[in-house]
Length: 195
Image (cartoon, rainbow, N blue to C red; front, side):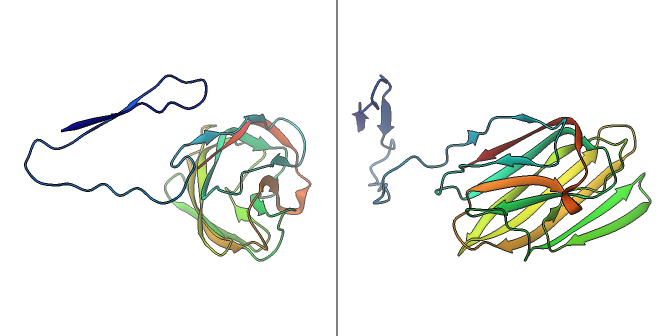
């Protein structure tokens, strides 16, 4: 048995086909009693990270449950640790549980931690970094971070990023900055993807 549903959205002409199994068994598909679009990945507008002390992404929809911040050849003009900060109405600058562990050339190990944001990688002014950090909603406006980075400028640098933060409300913004907020971005680009 097959059933054809032809219910295109406004301006569309697509269709969806649901086909039953080729057995005599009865199968049940139960759809949730909610409306909306689920599981769709939305890509933000990439921002060049070649100037300024902050890179901000705002107006993130209230329905978002997961956000990935992506770095492509990003560096700064100083040695302060870059941070990712989340926010609800304004950027949250306290209350983070954040750590990063870095391996350089397979032997040197360093560890960083912060309560002001998620430490993304340990930076030298001459290094550029690529990778991503994903934030997942745990519940009650608490977000969990997990990510990895690597140097794109010759020195092997692997960074593991983890942590959590409880926001005062629904997340609507992400900021990429540095400890102290004084170092200037001087290379690369940053974007977000959310669902």
